[in-house]
Image: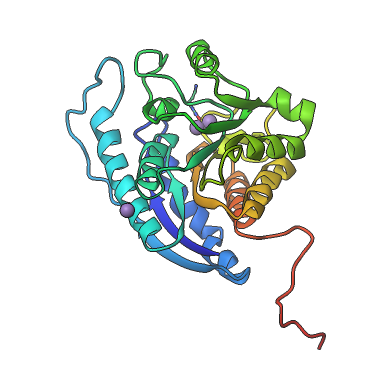
Length: 293
Ligand SMILES: N/C(=N\O)NCCC[NH3+]
Ligand SMILES: [Mn+2]
Ligand SMILES: [Mn+2]
Ligand SMILES: [Mn+2]
């Protein structure tokens, strides 16, 4: 696996400071070394620098529109560059509004991509349906959600639910995870996105898809989330398709942890999710040329 990492220290898609610290908190938990130790070739492109935007007044209730727009232009350019350089792209957030740029930039290179959106939330409010105007609750409405599957939903606004049903978007809520079990959810997810042809997968992973007991340091925690094992299984299954083309890991906010331990717990899980996407197996593994000493 060749992995290109881009940090997007951005928080203007939502009101809680701290999520811009996500990229470096995840790196500090050993992401690059752990990927290299499991045999990955890693290029860390560093962090994007987001210029301040003054007078960024709301537009029809949508908050920080110019800052979010500019940031996502930068993210899109970076992701496109990383894809052109031949890597599987890992975008470290920052809030989930960054998926607008990440998916847009990925689609510039791989227009046939499909999206797997792992999240407690649907993030598909339009500017007018959004109850808050925070763009991290809207990214999917800016993207043509033709080939997207949701996993982990348990906090969906009425407007979002209407849109999901109206567009016939494939969803696996936490009820579906309970009913089917995660293995069947992943089987059916892959049947859905690969029903016609094999497509590159864009996995957009909001850390709040996992239960707050597993990943407490996040802005909009919702109880009854994915277990650590379910969260990891999703990554293992996507990895074994061999079609993962880009990954977002977003909404890690160290400022919302109650202790250093909660920061570390959340960051370590975020790292483990990335490792699962790039070949880590819980059964263990050994190099092809391994010899018993
Ligand atoms: N984490 C969030 N989205 O994934 N928060 C915004 C959505 C709340 N309806
Ligand atoms: Mn989200
Ligand atoms: Mn191109
Ligand atoms: Mn969420």
